[in-house]
Image 1: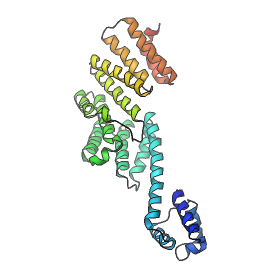
Image 2: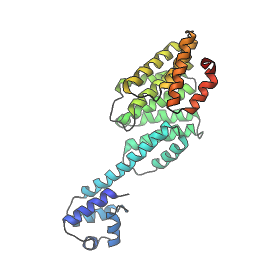
Image 3: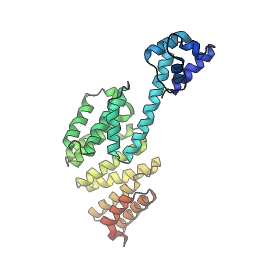
Image 4: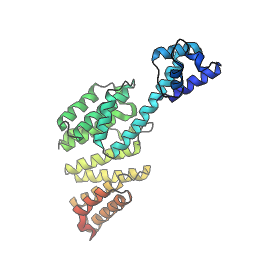
Length: 292
């Protein structure tokens, strides 16, 4: 809870050759100092000021330690949420986001991130309608400061989620509008999640949208782009999806049977090695004839 702060108090106390008993006089109990040094208690600002005066260090010396502690906790939670997102565990993400919206974090980006997740997961857990989710998320994109949304590509993630939601509504014009706002070439490093997989996820979503629009040529182009990008960045996470839609596009565009079957066999290969059991079931159920 306060390990970094505790270490700093111990270091400065020993450097000044002060005992816990001497340090706590007129400030708090020796037991409180012991808990602070063990990292089991975060003191209030009044105690931090008193300790800084007695140890002859600036108050920022301890405040920064508390900030670093909070930042480490926040980063650990962000990593957990990113895993849950990949697993589409929306109920758990919803509960985390709900809690974090009530937190005292001074990180504005952190609060906007969880506001977006709260609205998105409210829809995926049937707490609000798709239209309500779109209104809330679009309002966030419009009203949140751009300097915050541009950090860690939150703006791009929000635009991607809006594009997906509009595609679910079959409002393809607005879906494509949001996809066009995303510049895939700008997705670079320095993000708290796997930006390569994120970029591929956007291509997957665009591919599905064009397929649902019956624009099979463009869906085919997106599938091939996804395969090329997956190979380039050495990320196989969506390779089965790309080959599956490649096979579907080949069917719609009347390619030869052996070419169609080849894509579905490749899709099955990647689904199997990645352990995508549900996708394997869908593949066998809908495309079983291509494996005879």
